Amino acid sequence: MTRLPGKISERVYGDFLMSSRLAVYRALLETALEAGYKVVSIEGFWALIRGSIVDPASRYMVLRNDIDTGPKTARAMWRIERSLGIVSSYFFRLSSLDLALMADIGSAGGEASYHYEELATVAKGRHLRTPAEALRYLPEAQDLFRLNLDRLRVSSGQPIRIVASHGDFVNRKLGLTNWLILVDQPFRAEVGIELETYDAAFMDHVTSRHADLTNPPYWTPADPLLAIERGEPVIYVLVHPRGWQVERGLNARDDLVRGWQSLWYALPGRRRRRGSNASAAAKVGRQ
Image (tube, rainbow, N blue to C red; front, side, top):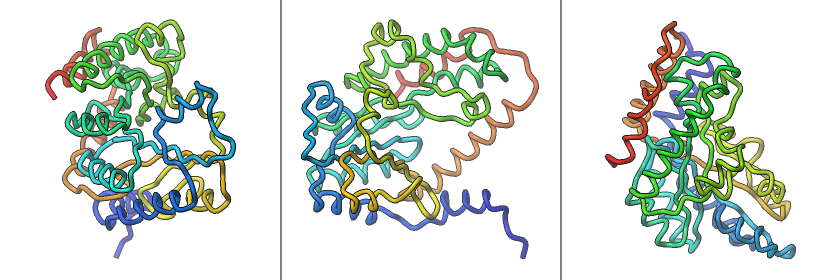
C-alpha cells in the first residue's frame, strides 16, 4: 500500500481521524489551577499590566482561543472553562462568527473579539504577489478592517478593543502579517483598538509561550504542562478548536475553500477593482 506524504497524512489525521482531546483540555486547566495559577483572558491580563498591578508573587496563565474554524467545539471548550470558574479570550474570524457564543462569553466576563485578516483578503482578491505590492494596498486593507470592525461591534454588541491577527497562506507567501494594518498608531486610535495581541507591551510580560498543533506532539515549542511544572510566572497558551475535536464536515469544507483559494491565487489574472472585497465585509451584517 502506498503511503500518503507526511504533510497530507497529518492533515487527514488532524481533520478527520483525531479522537476528541477535550478531556485533555480540561486536565490542562485543572492542573494549572491546582498549581495555583490564575487563568485570565488577554483583556484581564492587559488590565493588570496597564494598572501596574501584575503581582510578582502570583502565577498567571493567559488563555487565548483563536476560532479559525469550529465554533461548535469552541462552545464546548467555553463550557469546560465555565465549569472550572474561569474565563478567557475568544477571537472569531468573519468566517467563524457565532454571535450567540460571543454574547455568552461577554456576559460571563470573558473576552469575545475579532481575529482579523484584511491584508490577506485584499492580497488574495487582487492577486498581489510581492510584499511591495501588498504594502501599497495597505490603506485599502485598513479601510476594509474599519468597515468590518464597525459592523462586528454593532452585530455582536462587544466592545472589541483588543484584536488578534490571523495567519493565512498568502501571509506566508508574502512574508507579511495582518497586524501591519495596526502598526500606524493614529489609525489604531481612530478605530478604537487598544491592543494587538502580539504587541511587545503585552508579550514582554510573558515568560513561557505555547501554541497547540493538530498532530502529535500537539504543542509548539513544548507542552505547557512543562511550564507549569517549572513554575513559570506568566504562561501564554494559544489554542484552536480544530486541535481539540474533529468537525469533519466543517473541516472538509474549509479544506476545499482553502485549496480553491490557493489555486485561484496561483493562477495568472488581472487585479480586481477597488471594492471587490465588499462581499467579505457584508458577511458581518448577515450573521
